[in-house]
Length: 212
Image (cartoon, rainbow, N blue to C red):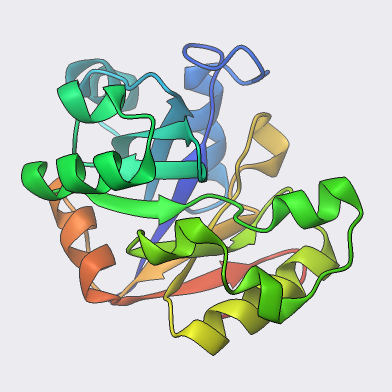
C-alpha cells in the first residue's frame, strides 16, 4: 500500500506569505487525492488538536511540522517542539531534534542558485553545509525551476542523500504538485519520522512527471 503525503505547505494561519486558508488546504488535498499533508509554517508550529479539528471525519491526515530559517538554510522539522524551535545554528538544531526523536529535511537546498542566477555547479552544490546535517532533502519542490530540479537530482544522487518532495504550496491550486509516496500508511507524525529515517519513500513531481 502506498501513502501520498505533501510534506511542505503553508497557510494564512501561520505564514503571512501564504494566501491559503486552512480549510482550503483540506478541501484541495482531498480533491487531488492526497492521503496526508504536513503543515509547515515558517518558524511557528500548529497545535496537534487544532490540526485534528480541521479534518473532521475525513480520512485525510494532517501532520504538524515547521520550516525553520537557520544559518545553513531552511529546514523542515517534524516531531519536535519547544526548545528545538529556538535553535538558530544547524548543529544545535540537529542535537535537539535527535534528543526529541524528530526528523530534519533540507527545504529547497538549491534555491539560492536559481535566485542568484549563479552557475549551477553540482560539485560545489554537493558541499552545501545543510546537507551534512539532515535526514533527507527536497529533490522536488513545487516552486523550483527545471534547472533547480535537475541540480537537486544530480547532487542527491552523488552524495547518496534521500530525496523527498513537497509542493511548498502557498495557494490551493499548487497543493500536491509535488509529493512523497511512502511505502506504509502513516497514522501519526511519529510514523512519518520513522519512515523518513528509514528512507521508505519515493519523491514524485506531477508537473515535470518525474520520480526520484
